[in-house]
Image (cartoon, rainbow, N blue to C red):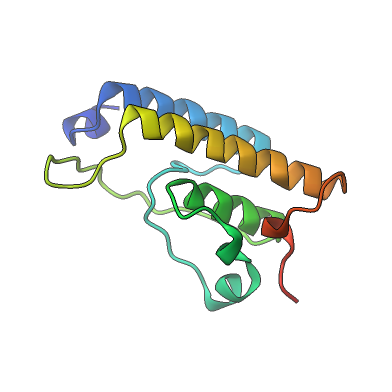
Length: 128
């Protein structure tokens, strides 16, 4: 916790980040340290399989992509990166954070409904 707060992360973001990462790990069967860093690396195979062009053009893109990769059966992991917040860098506001949270819930619901065959969601139709 100290590293994040010492790196400039606002306390409210830290609390929401840790809580949502815990919940996402639980419901998705993962063990990622942080679902929200935004720093990612993907193999060519993942990029050729995941229909990411169906995703949001906002912060929710990362959540959708991770859920798509999990749904497609790819193994995912993470490498810790240091937290650095500064006024010069773009940062998501509380209002956009709430919208981002709803985007994650929407992606999870879309994935589950697609898996249960209750609704076709093009975000979870992997390319052949």
